Structures are given as structure tokens and as C-alpha cells.
Length: 353
Image (tube, rainbow, N blue to C red; front, top):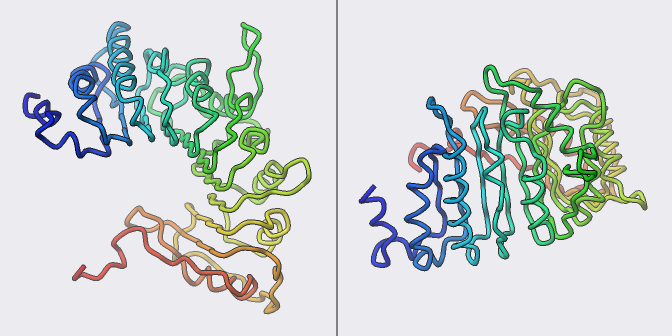
């Protein structure tokens, strides 16, 4: 730790650090955070912080959670004037992880907040403490990411149901108030990414986004694949009171290949859409079938779509663009639509790069 702590000196790399990633356990968090807090004045360029709470085989006590919360709180308070992006990844199954969000300091420059966690009844319960953090920064957040980790072995509680309750239901608690996502409003939010879950009931799985995020421009839905019926629900949810949706970018996971019915739905209800990305997780790239009898007449001459990206699972683990699928639909889309066939991995890279 002595070498690590030496990095935070004014004559070391600390003044030039713009992003910091910490992956540790609850028990060890204070040992990392306390030296950083003392060096806050030197970390003048630190704007992006990521904290990953790893699982541990040791039993974590209440006192250890309190110590971790205090250490994190002091760190964030000391860097409150510089932090613009904050990410939490929480791999904890049981204990008191909600304590992390107790007495969360106000970060006046925070623009992006991301949390990735397993929302089960004994891990992160996105209730009062979590809503407290979001509400405190809701007026100026521009980018919000809330993703759900897969259930851990022997995790008690129905994580998907708990997550859906928080995300979509306006549930009144014993104090006569609601600590759920629908009671929040993010007037400046431009980008929202949500890990979609299905739950055990056929209820709507999308929150009332026009009321929560009235100026949303980009929506990214990860997690569960959506069937056509769910996409219909999504489009209906996105429509404002005047029936118009101003969404510019949409990305979601689908259960079947892009079809003309789906394009009809999106073009008719999302006329301002500029970018569309559809991913297919359960259909290997080699098994995707394409319609053989598409109309050659452009069916959406007034649609403002500018970019189309269709991806499928690949052996490398990073989704690959499927140019054949995109080209099969390009001729019925507006003439200036760009086919986004860029690889986000090195599978298509030159061996000399």
C-alpha cells in the first residue's frame, strides 16, 4: 500500500489523473479511500470515478459497512467539486449494502450516474436510500444507467420482481410516501440505459418515461430480449400527451429478426428517431434468416432515421454487426440512412494494427 499511496503525492501522477477505478471489498474500502481523501486537493482533475464492491468469503459486519460508508462519503465530499461521473458496481449478495447510499453527499457537478447491482431482497433494495441519491441529483443529471446483474446462486428474494416494483410501480410505503423510480423527475436527462427485466407477471415492464424524463433523447434497453408485443408497449409508453415522441436514439434487444411490421411500428410512432440499434442475443449470426419478398418501394420517405445497426451474438462475446441483415432492409428505408457495420472488437482488425 505504501507504493500505492505514494501515487497521490503532488509530485507524482495524482495531478494528472482524470479517471479512477477501484475494485475492492467492503472491508478494504477505507484503506483505499482514506489516502485519496487526504490527497483531494492534489486530485484536481479527477472527474470520473468507478467503485466496484467485490464479493468476499468473509462475513461482513455491520460496523464494516458503516466504516466503508463513512470512507466513501468523506471521499465524495472531498472531491465533490470535481466529480462529474460516478459508477457503482455491487456484487454483494447479502448484508447491508443499502448503507452505502445513506448520507450520500451532494455532488454539484455530477452529470452521469451508473449503478450495476443485483436488486434482490437481501442485497440492493432500491428504496429510500437509493431514491435519496437519485432525487438529490435529478435536477441536473444528463446520463443515467441502471443495470441489473444476474441472480447469484442461492440469492434469496425475487430480484426481477423487486427491480420491476421499483422501476414501474408507484408503491406507497408505511411512511405514506413512495420510494420508487416513477416519483422522480429528471428534466435534463438526455441518455437513459436500463436493464430490462420481465418478472413473473405480464404487467408493463416500462416506466412512464415522458413524465420521468421529459427531454430524453437516447434510450438504451439491455437485459431481456423484447418480443413484438413488448416493443408495442414501449412505443406506447414513449408517446407524450400529444402523441408525439421526440426520441432520437433507440437501442434494444429483440427476440426475432427485424421485420417490416416492427419497422412500420417504429417509423409510425417514433418519427424523430435518428439512430436505431437492434441486437439479437439468442440467434447466432449464421442462423439469421431474411425475408425474401420485401417491397422495393421506399415505405418511410418522411422518417428521419439516419443510422441503422443490427447485431447478433458472436464467438468472441462482443456483438458483431450483421451487414447482410442491414442491407436487406436498407432499400426500404430513407435514402440517406447509414449502415453502421463497425466492429466494437478486434475480430475484423488487420493483424498489422
